[in-house]
Structures are given as structure tokens and as C-alpha cells.
Length: 238
Length: 109
View (cartoon, chains in turn brown, yellow):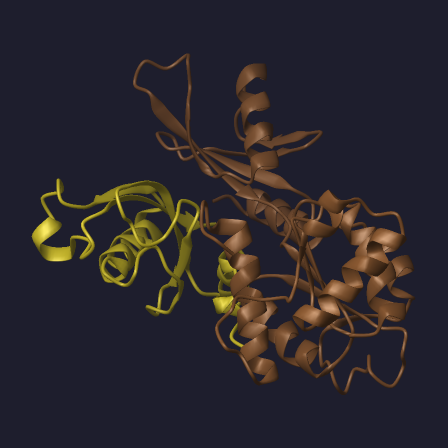
């Protein structure tokens, strides 16, 4: 890999810019494809370029058939998308366990809590903290299809506004901590807020896989297991 | 926390080793067939001291890949390696799970 390509790839990753490194497996030449530009050692036909950008959107690395080449597979497309994100509402005890578990799983974690005593650097060393009211924080952070949102406060004043924004976003996972009874009451409030039955049904609640989790760390594992199942587990009940 | 456990940061590790003056090669899974343990795009960085970060299988072929990576560091030429039941090296370093995997190895300039 040439120095110039390496530096540009690192810069794209550091700036959370989606990019694909395309390698010609015969020559070793490499080209970086971004959503709007291209940089590198060889050019790509427009239809191949479209396909590479499709792969970026699909987050799907793999070999690419070059129709100009009778030998078949020659290009390898390595998609480097920004990390998946986890937005945790509530800087509570479970969040202190969930944040590192999620980080280890490869997620870029932000903990949202307007209560200054909870969302502190001492309680969440090295974790991004957001002190806005949860609905404002989510509006600012704009959950996309690569974002999971989990509410952990148990406090309707904080959880409910966050859920309203999260459910109307493309977030691939929305979970809410609380017992079955708490969750049923929550759904009633959200219906009263004007959310549809289909929207409230998208909430994973009580949050997490049913593994008998008791401690904050175990609950964090059950939540991360469920997020992973929703992301990866085709046809798995989760 | 061990950074190399995090997803998708092997390129950064390779760059860090390179910046420290070591020779480095990157190995990337470019294709898999059957039940291979690591998906396409999985990477391993190797340096000239034999340090490894990341993985391209469940541990079955990393030594062989590191050996080829050392050659790429020497001659600067990339290599496309195949491992699996149809490969002549299968008895030596075949994937225990029976899958097949193709790994691209390149030196980092």
C-alpha cells in the first residue's frame, strides 16, 4: 500500500468519511473511492464506480467482477464506513457497563443525560457525553440506519421524548429499559403522544435478550447481544 | 482496553508500527467460501518483529500468513494466498472448520 493511499485512508477514517479502498489484485494498484470523488492509482469505469459506491452504502466489502476482464474477479473493494453508533440516554449505572461493552463491540458511544451529577467524566472516562435534553440531543446527533438508541433512565420525562425522536428516525435499533409493567405504561403514554401502533411496536422493551441478567454488566451484555442480533442475526428471534 | 479488539482499526495499527520505523504488511480476507471463521474485510497487521494485530481466521492460518507477510516486506510484492481443503497446503494449515479463504497480503510503504 502506497504511503499516499494509507494517509488518505487514515484521514477518511479519522474524519468518519465513508470510503472504499479498491485494490487491483493483479497489479496491487489501489484507488480510494469516496461518495463524491476518487483518488488513486487507476481509474474506474463509471458503472464500476457506481457499483463501488453501492457497496459503500450497503457496507459490503468483497470482490468485484470487471466486465472488461475475461478472467473474472480482479478487484477487491474494502469498505471503510464510520463506526456504528450507540446513543445511550441516561448516564446511570447500567450505562457505565454498557458504554465499554459497546465500545469493545466496535460502536462509537455517546451518553446523553442533562443531569450534571450523572454524566461526568469521572463516571464515564473517555466516553462522549452530551448534556442536552434527550430529544434535543438526538435531534442534534441525527440517528441514521447505522445507529442504535437505548433509553435507561426509567424517567418518562427523559426517556419518552428521546423515544419519540428515535422512533421517527432511521435508527436500526430502539430499546427501552423497564419492566413489562413499566413498558406497558410507557407505550400508553407514547400512544397518547400521537405515535402509531407500528411505531411503538418498534421499541425493544423490556430491553435486551432474555438471559436472566441481573447485574448492570449482565444487563449490558443482554442489551449488546440484542443489538448484535438485530444487526446480524438474519431470521433470529431477538 | 485493547484497541486491536475494536472493529476495523488494523490499518491504524499498521500505520502506528510503520511510524515507529518498523516494516509492516497488511493481510486482508478478500473472499470466503463455506464456514470460514472471519468475514471478508477482516485484517491482520504484521511487523518485522513478528508482532500481529487482528486476525484473518480463527487462528488456524495466521502463522502461515505472517510468514508470507515477511516475504512481502522483503520484496515489496503483494501476494494472494488461498487456504482451504482444495489447497495443497491444506494438511499443513487448512482451516479446521472446513471453509476456504483467500487472503491478500501487501507491504505498507
